[in-house]
Image 1 (cartoon, helix red, strand yellow):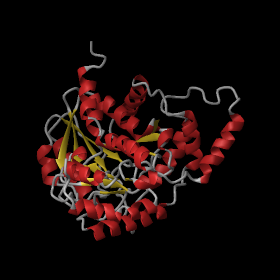
Image 2 (tube, rainbow, N blue to C red; image 1 turned 180 degrees about the vertical axis):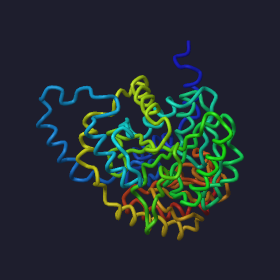
Image 3 (cartoon, rainbow, N blue to C red; image 1 turned 90 degrees about the vertical axis):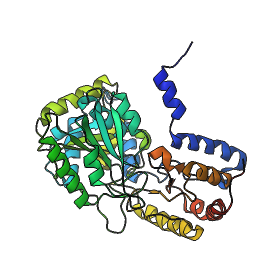
Image 4 (spheres, helix red, strand yellow; image 1 turned 120 degrees about the vertical axis):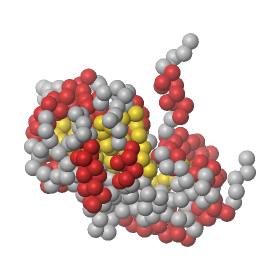
Length: 398
């Protein structure tokens, strides 16, 4: 007797590199102690939320006994929260958005799944630049679609527009981009995004079902040295932004995100109706009531990004001293260095021998590199130097 479907059994077998390494790190810390393991495996923000979050929770506690304080609301979210969020996003995304253009979701992951459920026909394709967030493939397959990765340029990780153009087929329904990017920290330049939109527009003229451009932007707030994440909504009418407040408010467990449609999108109202319906039948029903209330109070607030900037500088110094090749991340809290020797899986095993936890680039669809999440304390980054040096110079012996 098999408890699982063959599909889920196969998913677990290939699983997520991030979770595997994170869980192995838990075991290592039990053996050696927390202060003896340098864990760069999981992008779990360690900074406390802004004070406004605690203030909001205290206020909610006072109203918790009121009837329907946390009852059902429209599946798209509280109307007054949608209105406030639309005003906030209008400035951020350089569009005139209204409450009807935005839906609150159970995090960005919930938003992506709702969007794909609403627009994908079985057998269609979701194209994305590689490296990419590891769960994208599962999200596509949840809705009987196929993920089609297209590699970005080595070391710089910019879009290869010619390769994207060549990869688009009659089955392409969604192009999914993530900028600032996990795992590279790259921000796709405006000129490349405009070029991508021109490519999509050209393909749309030859087909009945147009291609959506879906921008996954949970790291938009976290950029360095004057870099800016270009807004895609003004560039392309069939574009959509999906994001969350997991990173900028340090609330990943609150599961609060949103879908924002381009205000000038043709058939926008029909799509929004489909998103709201998909939100319900996928079992999300609505974004968490408490998280929506927090969001309303916390709009415009964020964690202290200067802390991440300092850690980025320390991490870069450590990698430089240890002799690694890497591109300086423009955003997010990841480095994606080149794996010495080329075999990223083998090299991550060598790092593990030095009690350093990293994730191989193969898990992100880009072998030959590895990811380091620097959302950890400065002392962790600093004491990793000797281990990084040893991993370069010592070959693994099994």
